Length: 596
Image (tube, rainbow, N blue to C red; front, side, top):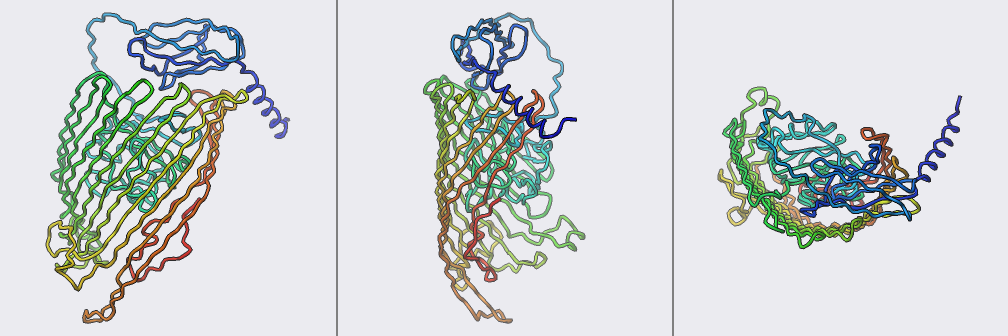
């Protein structure tokens, strides 16, 4: 019987033989002879019909061979088949192919029924959008034409994605509460949430909560990485979610889509999108409105979401795009219920003066440049100008009856900007194909929070009323600037045709500051103030560290892959960790970032 250590030596010898055989490399790019655009999923086979390579989204392909002469067949449905004989005079042979469409007059075709695949989900390619996804637990959720998109219903969008924790707090999906690996789903604060590759959360470092998500009707795909995304995307423990918006249509100057939806509890949603391409300019824009009353009393809401994308192709290699995202929504909050109240009437509410407002304005500019067929560069700049406000009677006891005096108000402002650059390069080293990604991120946030007296009315008035209630001073006011500088590198090293390694690292510099005060007020049993102290806090936390990670992937065949990875990650100290808003809180001066 073969011993384990003997098997290990045979396995090592097998890998050496596999990696030593490939001597010659055939590579190139496949384009459309008419549009000169790249063609994806072109099949390159030998004369016996054996599949050698498939072109990627950029039309590029590559095949390693240990023989000096080979006959290949290049084919794709709808294009003329091409036959080529390759004689390798040296180790590399560059063959660029221009394919012609087959033009044929067809009779009328009547489609009676088309059955869609119910598993509307797949996996992200190893290299996509100037990012590396190899050796990671990733999923690509196809958002197009899924049910439940009009109401942003996450139960339908993620119903085939295992191990996610999701809960809903409203009838129209105004916020996404999603968590993974047992982490708290509240406002998706344990995921790195992005839209088209840039941040959309309030502050990825100090306030990593997502008050805005794009409507599902506007999405093409959702990229999801579980856990091991820290090396390329930074702070997170749950993973990485990127909402990919629909691309502008290429074959029309104008396409208009209008959807009107009505539902229970006076739900009404409207989605209008405009898309098209005119020469080198393409665009996609939408406006989405939602109104409803909710299934409980005092739970009305209304929102408007506007998005615009414009891109311009300066050349075949350079593309520049600009995006603007705006969200404004107002929601009435009916308050919580005790167990007794829930058993009596789950629809009841004893809060009719509590309101919540979000105003989100995002700017983004991206430039993508193909230096060569093997080297691509991108830069992504983003700006956030946003706020969230809450007002209401905020008693710790949810069954307390509203006193109808002045309400408590909390106002938060987020002014953040940053940019991220990536360079991805494919090359060969010691007969090994390697893909290397280098990136840099600069981020600056300046965020403020204030808590004080609000009006005594029922309306959503979010103005502070310090002059009306001079005895009710601001309870707290904080300013929280922070900066983040990062450098990261991740690679795919192809050991042979079926095994690859994915090593990487990320260096972080983080500075989190806080400056502000809170009021410590004590009263006697008659409600008279016997203590009114202002407690000031000020501090700055600077830290530098390096994160390491390694992944391995073994592809047995086209439908079976084994992978494993280990990656360090972290979560920076948040504003809630270092701002005192309750006299019973004490901040540990040695508080550190979470790491794992």
